[in-house]
Length: 261
Ligand code: MG
Image: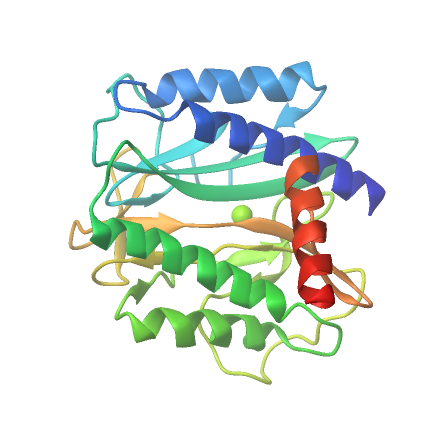
């Protein structure tokens, strides 16, 4: 668990460095290069590079960079991001034999209120799923929490891709769908670590894959947002591993202020 904490903090630092760089004019190839360098300088391996599920071509980049209607697994390129775009970045690192996985959707300059809400609700869905990460709850409770919230806004919930267990490998059992019924699927126990990752679409939940065999887009071309944390289940509840030291300190402070209030 200590090693999972280390890699979680490491990858969170990369995520926040990229967040600070996103602005109109920057390219996803530039962001990818920074992410790869940060991971390697820290002694970590970019887990995505060369990742090759059965029957697939190896993934070529350190990050998945998915713009607007791209849902996940987007390739980095030299097209400058423009004002009003949203960029979903998904990334994973392997360090000391353990993997951390995180994703976030970042506005490029000023974006529409419609897109702001999509990003906000996606993050709220992630928080609600994390709150369900308690021993003796079930994996279906996480999906139900995401689904209940997302459907209030009429968003399409991506079904073709799910969260997952994580540890020595990026993708371990169980699958963690972003929809479902409470009280169903695997029982959660202390010591489990999950990568939880709701993906919400403005329109249909349906997706298709482009000719590059990786990039997933919404079928109707409407925008999609993504949020992911690696979360450990402790006897007392969830511990988010993919936070920077500063974010952890702030979370602790907010919690103690809530208690004293
Ligand atoms: Mg993941």
